[in-house]
Length: 164
Image (cartoon, rainbow, N blue to C red; front, top):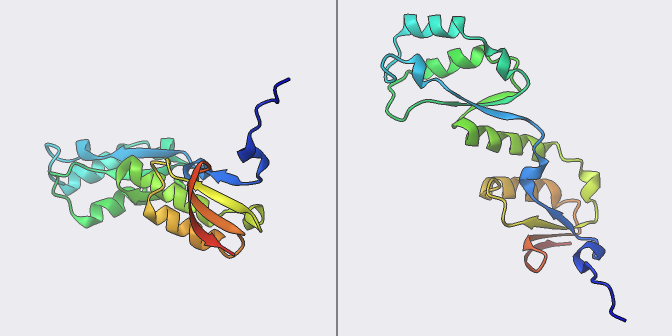
């Protein structure tokens, strides 16, 4: 009689974690290139009128990443004027959708319940496209004081990072 296939990783007590799975904030992009004259330049009066007429309620409770064409010539205050209308957003950052996701990940890591990781062996999965060096370092500095060990990679091939 054959023994059933065992999942030794599941039995090991290792916590496998994909950092982007921690995100609980919906992220959206607000590209305001169309609010510029010919998509290139801020003309203050027209720009402010467009902003006043825009319905920003769709961004309430969301993480907003502002974006504009790389070719645009805009004053720094324009970002602030838009952000002032997004007061009910969870947060506002530059960098479009990717910038919003990065900020949402930062929020998620900073609000981790450390009790979940106390004396645990943790593998931070290496295939997560969103979790770059900044998120990995933030996670490590936040969790290392309570973790038993932290590894990077996949259960079949980890790189030891920290061991108590």
